[in-house]
Image (cartoon, rainbow, N blue to C red; front, side, top):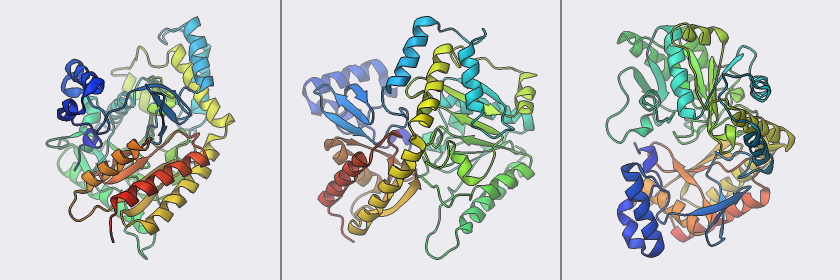
Length: 445
């Protein structure tokens, strides 16, 4: 399995060969950041400004951002920037003081979620959110065992890394974390409910194993678009049987909405809603603040109560006045600018275009996803590794000023997740660029 940070990563050993100011800047970066420095693309980029779906480098060249789900409503959205600026100029403190803005945002956020989920705890990152969610589940159930999918990524704290198989370069998750196959359709004439049945059977087997080994069953944790696994969204509803089974076994259901949340799927604000389920805990992050570090955990009161009786939780910067102003502005922009509908319309157009490309390019094995989160599984030439071929496609697109990423256990899936404001014209530009790149690589049947 490919380690997630290695997909599309720059090889720092190649820095000197680039020459000139770029090589010098990369050398400075590596010297300051050390081994933890991660850059994208064979020829790293430096950006100085952004707007909407576009990033501009130091020379003023525009690059279409079809990769970054952090600025969900568009880079440097004026309303979000204005909300942050106004609040930063007035007050920005932790939330141990009463503040109307923080309270109003909390209420607005909770109003978008199923009624049983009535408590929100603010954090700064999705990693912090998933870390807290795991602690909540362990305290409430008295068990430790967690079930995740094979190439899942849920963050980089100690607990979140344990449940992120794709984060490991060596080894793998500890024994109390059981890894199951992603819910992939086998295609052909098989009925769609086979996906649900197979996934539920995987969950059942993992629960039995955890209980048999004495770990107990604490939580089923999933990203409802299974982004790091390679993007698996269909058929809508396939998660319901596994969720019901997990509940019967006494575990909690944690929906990680960092990737599919805030309208990404185009069908609902939250990815789990496509499946007709109500999780016990919902975690969120990146797109929540459109670039500002804002995240949250939402759960039922009895789950949070049980945790706070023993430990409690406080996050200095989580839910600050500025964070609340930014988060509230993001929710308002999504609603008032029709970005949910835009994700549905433009996402469907983009998916149809990708499927049309698949009829002309043998390199496209399958197109998956929904809304503005799509995965394109590639078929590499016999002489080439799948991840290497995918990297070649991504870097060729980068040279055409189109930015996308990679996903999947084998690193052979193109990951498309542009801002929700992507236009039809921008989608067509992405399609035309991919068409040109695949033609240049000439992969035969």
